[in-house]
Image (cartoon, rainbow, N blue to C red):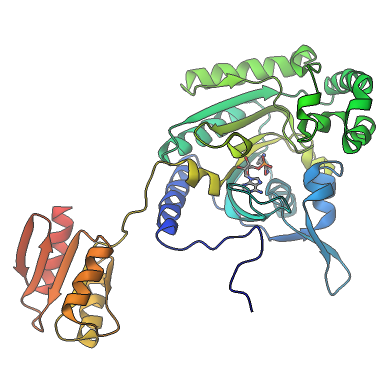
Length: 403
Ligand code: HAM
């Protein structure tokens, strides 16, 4: 029996989990401010959903999926991303018009593990469906930006691009194909195959990255409608005071994108894993998975990377530690009363010495120590610059007042 988690997965425990919990609370707050209700979809989906939605020539689908046949003979996959599942849930619900959902949970990709890149990772994200205009793109991007700032990611760069739509992208893809045909002999076998099936994906190739020279750029091929949409998105971001840089090589690794694409870069992280998140518009996705035409835009953030990039440090989440001079059983009911009043309180359940209990309180760095000597009328309340004796009923009010 090994006590290690499987390769590419991690345990999350205190104190690191405390930063997680705080930033997740920040996420719940910010996603709610922008009108997103929670959406939770299954971790397992039919394999077909990702093949058709994400694209059967993408790296995610060809190399990274955890796919298996269940006992009923169906091919199922641990979700490698959230957008396809959320769009499926929307279509299944029969809802119409503007629709939003925010999610948070584990995702799975069979990748080579390294810092900030794991086989099970956590994403938070939003999907905004039913709105075609640039207001939706801009609102989504602004939310991602404001949340990351609030999460303590101060070294942050937003990169944006437009990758066109079914009207203008074919012209670009044809030009790209001609260009890569000229480079064919210098490219890996995977990329050579992609020249014929999906030339855009050659641009994401990690092995060939340095061989690609200067391929044609989508910005030279955008049709009028896509160019106008992109101009409006940039204008709205400027009016919202969201700083961005344009990156004409930003095509993203999933096939469903149309028009706007963007990435949030944590510029303080190692460059191989510095994308803290990304997203874009995907107006063709609903149809690709067999549903009615539905425009959409969204993003997902790699939560592990958000935490790595954040300058928040683990702190205590407790309001007080209760030291008992009369053992753990009386402490249980004293703590219960304080907890019912809304305080976050911990105490020693092992019956250790008073000295030992103080040591634990200091190690936990609690702001307040409460000493119970056996009398509810005289609780000793010790804070850094304040020491008073109070009846139990007055403790919570006193602590809330001094906070
Ligand atoms: P994605 O770019 O594939 O997009 O993933 C989003 C983020 O998830 C990445 O920027 C990265 O931070 C994180 N991530 C991806 N793989 C790993 C990994 N192996 N280990 C750690 N973090 C990872 C999507 O997933 C799209 N569904 C985003 C979206 C939503 N587009 C529209 N709506």
